[in-house]
Each structure stands twice: as C-alpha cells, then as structure tokens.
Length: 190
Image 1: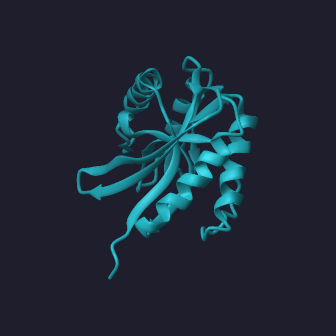
Image 2: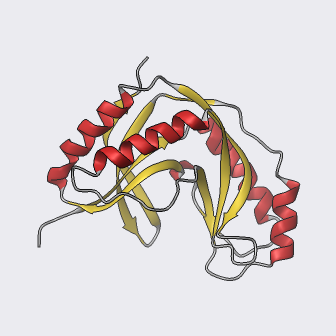
C-alpha cells in the first residue's frame, strides 16, 4: 500500500489569539462540563480538509494555494464569542467565532474549494462556517449549563490579527492528540 499523509489547508493563529482561547476555555471549564479541550497552540482556521492524500499531490495543492493567496491582499480577523455544533441540545463541538473581514476569508475558502476540484479533491457540499474549534464532547452536555456559559461570553473578543498566509499542514494522529507539520506556506499579496 502506498504511503499517504493526512492534510489540510488552514490559516495559522497568532499567539495573542491562543492566549484569548485559553481564557475562553478556562471560563467554560469552570462550569464543570465534560469537554476534551483542544490545545490552544494546535488551533488553526481550517479552510479545506484534504483527507488522506498521496504525497505526490502536494505540489498541485501548493500551486493552487499560491494562486489563491497571490490574488488576495492581507486582511484582519478577530476571534469572538463561543458557540457549538450542531446545537445546544446535542453539542459535540465547541468553537469561537470570527469577526472582521469575513467576506475576504469566504472568498479565499471558495477559491480553494473550487480550485482544488480540478486537481482531484471533492468539493465540500456543506456551507463553510468560519470558526476555531476549541473543544469536543462525546457525551451529552447539560443544555442549561452550556447555554448559560455561552450566553455569559457572547460579547468576548480577541484583538484583531492580520491574515497574511495560508499553510498546508500534515496532521499526525497519536494517542496524545494531533501534531501538525507545515508542508507549504503561501503568502497573501502585500
């Protein structure tokens, strides 16, 4: 069997936003909910999950990333209040939302999605909801506790950060959690 790697395209998150996320996680953790928290230094803004790919496909992905990044100037985003997928009653994923130039972010994601189709990557049929995953739960969370915790934090926000690059990451799964290695970086037009 040919070796493959698990890959995705994402926007890296600066340390200032990681600090903000740790603060959000700590406040939510104090409510006593059974949540498996994502290490703040592992959080990134996923634009396109590629799945298991043959390493020979990396140059085609990198070329598409370069083309998309080269057509869009840098812009500002910020992290905001927390939310959940799919809903409060069946919450499985906890996230913080994003604010700022969401239109430009959506344009990058749409360009990657459509540009990677011709090189063999299936287009995602679900709408793109920009977010940063901060935790997961396999057990049902108390909807009232969760709702109150999220409501108390709906106005929190990080400082803005400048989106200047897209990164193709390789993900290596282990019992201790995922580890990421950069395979390629594409810089937005300056």
